[in-house]
Image (cartoon, rainbow, N blue to C red; front, top):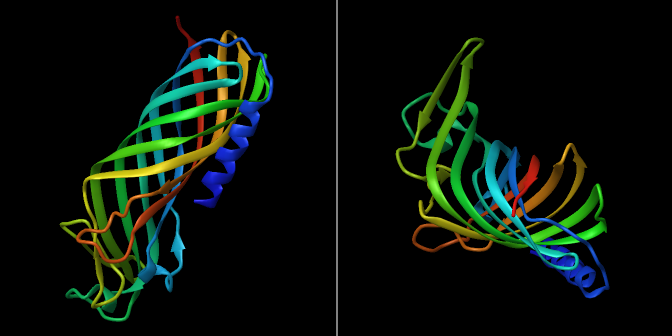
Length: 234
């Protein structure tokens, strides 16, 4: 949350200064890699390894005034986490006390509305900041556990509903609806052959709890690195 507020304040300060930049509306195509974990109290004692996913989507960027613009986006976004767990903690029939890995995969269709502020440049190359809300709708949820039982064999199990085990007695049941959060980040682009190519680093923080029935808050945290290109229209 602190990161989002800091970057949003920086954008506001940039917008307050005098600037003049001619710009065009663009249609943008972006794709990249996501690294996701979740914030949940009962998982604090376990070391999470970010789950690698992907993102791809379309957006329209419209200049409003000076260095300020807005970007409306629609994309497919992968989230989740992975962490180590023993087979006994899973609590299902199978070998006991074998270390394994639990993987929580979540895919969303995400709609975002991001403020865009030029930080530097504005000709053929520029540096810009992005910040704003995002609403994501659940596409699918998969939770599975895998543990090696030999050099070329393994044992595993999956869950038919969206819940993640922490130990034998604790299961976090997750909603399969919408997820609301904030996005902030920075990007750079360069123009070549009438196309602007971009590289962006974004951070997503879930603001609503994903936990079914209350209890401890469960929120997504996602880092994204994405590439893209933009074509002018209008």
